[in-house]
Length: 57
Image 1 (cartoon, rainbow, N blue to C red):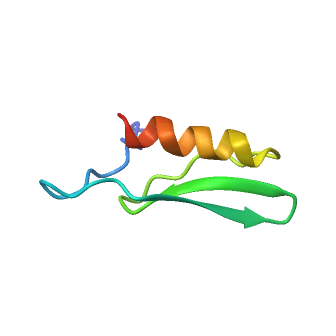
Image 2 (cartoon, one colour):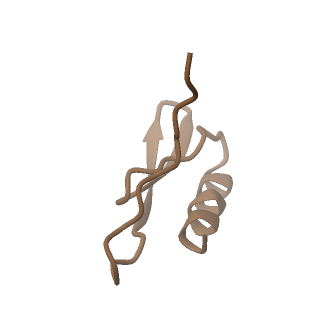
């Protein structure tokens, strides 16, 4: 079985990553307009930190 590239697509040239957080039951996760999403977190602050880290990559 071949390994798939699971990296998120990058936004078009000049387009910034726009992140937000989404609540799913007791969990919160970060999402981006490029299709990336972070792991489910119980703490909103950790989901926001995931989003900030992604936006600066």
